[in-house]
Amino acid sequence: METTKLSNEILFMQPTYKNNHSITYKKNGIYYKLFKDTTKGEIDTKINKIELLNDMGINDQMVLGNIELDGSIVGYSYSVKDEVAHSNFKTLDSMSVNRKTKIEDLDLLKKKLEHFHKDNIIHGDIRLKNVLIGNNVESGKKEIIFRDLDNVSINGSSFGYDSYLQDSYIKRFGINNNLDNMMFNIAVISYLKNVIEAATINYVEECGLPFSLNSKHNIKIMDSMIKLDDCEKIKTLNYKKRH
Image 1 (cartoon, rainbow, N blue to C red):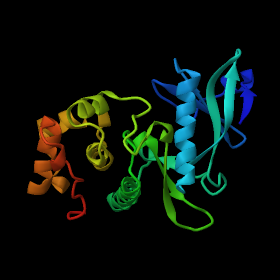
Image 2 (image 1 turned 60 degrees about the vertical axis):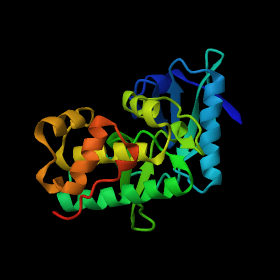
Image 3 (image 1 turned 45 degrees about the horizontal axis):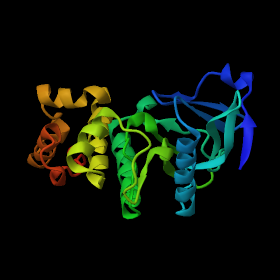
């Protein structure tokens, strides 16, 4: 695998994405993902996960090589499948569309998660900013692309890092598909009602479910999510009936 020395030019660019653990830059169709306080061994593990996903036919990201800064490996570079076809993709948290389109987007997201789960893959961090959506200019079809695939769990492996919500869930129930169901449900409410994801559980506790989601089925799911008392009850919300 090739190693690229990070240039100052890239470091002074506007990041395309960042969180508490990493920052990503993009130049000439290539993404440069740099990690904070992460060892080379941990970076190798992340790269191995993406390569394993590629072997399984999941090509949202394809690693190009390591990134070196001041003599240390600090990240890796990667490309997105068919960059030209996906140059118009946007994160769900940046979309401004009507409810019907949002339902279509959520259906695509749900189907992609179901495909992951059939292959024993748990994303573990389904948030609107980690989900990109757009039209493939070649096929003309709308598609979903995931970010942060280097953190997924494959066949029960640990995640790349745990958020507070992940950590609370995993301590009680371990790593299983219902973690994705819980985070998907939070994303559903956030996307449909423009509620900040971090405040979604508090929103439901104080205000109840939005009218369009307020059913006995959904109330049972959200009650189990709020209490974290039984992960088997955390199924995906029914969000189709009232749109």
